[in-house]
Amino acid sequence: MTSKDSILAAIRRHQVPAAPLPELDGPWITYDDPLAAFTASVEAVGGQVARVGNRDELAERLQVLPAWNAAQTICNTVPGVDLGNFDLDACADPHQLEHIDLAVVEGQFAVAENGAVWVTDEHLRHRVVLFIAQHLALVTPADQVVDNLHQAYQRLAWGERGFGVLISGPSKTADIEQSLVIGAHGARSLTVFLLDDAS
View 1 (tube, one colour):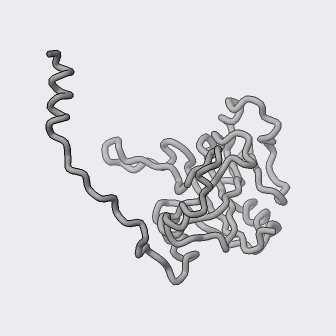
View 2 (view 1 turned 180 degrees about the horizontal axis):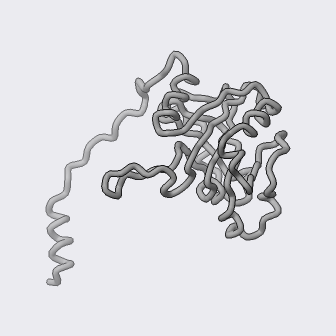
View 3 (view 1 turned 135 degrees about the vertical axis):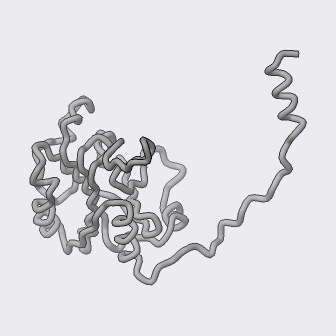
């Protein structure tokens, strides 16, 4: 008998008894004010939230962001906001995105429990822009903030192919010498704009 066979045989002899799966019908966390809870969650992880009335106000608020004013290359994919100087749809090679300073991307909904925004690639040609940009601004309707992840999962279409990700940020790590580094593996800053009038 080989060592591999003896290890596998030992594993088979020591099976853990089956346990019932947990119930998934709650009660799950809810908030009296999901927008305030979402804002607190985003701020707790180093991001910021701004409430804007419409797309015109969004354009004004974007242009006063420190990341906007410091940026040389800005990619904006939000419909109805005619700002930015890099056309993501015209870019054939995602390697050209390494110089994106700020990406402005639309999210579908947000989760108050963990301060995350659900973003898909439905209108996003290169999804790597979410992770390679120096700074990230996500725009999501204010009336699409759910309380918890269980409500978020109920909104997802599991039978459809595609890409989707819950983004909360900015990126950070404290693995090295227990020193917190912001922007280690992704965006150095995250601003979420909650849009009152998403039409």
